[in-house]
Length: 151
Image (cartoon, rainbow, N blue to C red; front, side, top):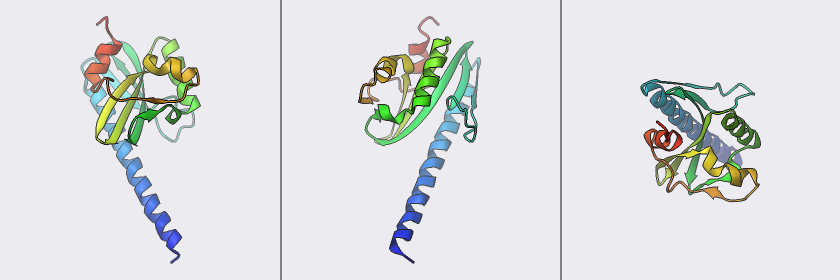
C-alpha cells in the first residue's frame, strides 16, 4: 500500500465522522425546536439542490430559518457562509421571517445562535472577519427572547 493512500483513508474516515457528528447535532436541534410548545420544525433534505437553509421552523406563529454551521475552534468566519446561503437568509428576513445562524464549536465546546440581522450588514458589505460566539444567544430560549422582543 502506498503511504499517501493510507493517509487519505484516515482523512476520509475523519471527515465522515465530522459530517455524521454535525448531522446528529442538526437533527437534535430540529427535535429540540419541534418539542417547543406551539412550534414545529423540519429539516430540508441535503440532496436537494435548491435547499434554502437547513431547518425551517414556526414558533408561536413566527417563521424561522436556521442555517447550521459547525466549526472546530475559534469564531465563525464570514467566508463560511456561501453566497447562496447569504442570499436565502436575506430573502427570508426581507419576507418577514426570522433568520438565525446556529453555530456549534467543538473546541472549547460551545453553541450559539446568531440572529441574521446582527451580522447581515457587514456580510453584505463584503467585510472580512468573523462572528464571535461570545455575547451571542447560547440557547433557543435566548434567541427567541432576542428575536421576538414583543412576545
